[in-house]
Length: 161
Image 1 (cartoon, rainbow, N blue to C red):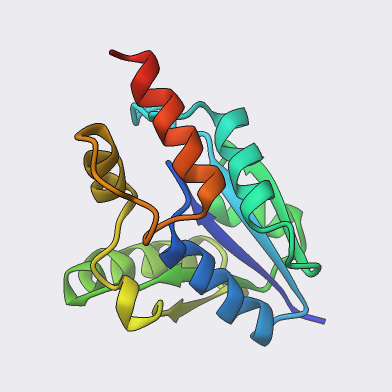
Image 2: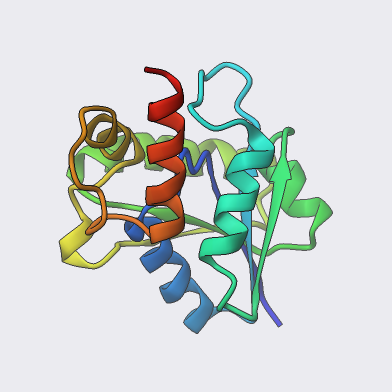
């Protein structure tokens, strides 16, 4: 039984994230989607909101658990008996940072492997930042995220007006 961790800020979760989870769930017995507290980042949704959105979006994946975390990823992975860290790669521009991150993680916990998964080609351009920008300016985000997230973005940006 192999447990994989898919960490991220998920502010908010996109269809690209969901596609990576779908792919990971086919490969690993258990997938833990780890929502980072990221105190140094200013997020649109707070940690409990992000966890709730991710849980709702991924409710149909029985082998997926969603939890928040605030410590080093490798320490969190170790505490959950995970053998793999999943990282999404959208484009070549992601690669350099991801290789650095994997190297650092390996130097701290040599027994935890990093596996890269690419989302469907339709989502390779998609990021949470772009999604928020589209929503903030009144654009249609329905092709890029779950309806629950779409509604949450609408509420968030309407409350800021």
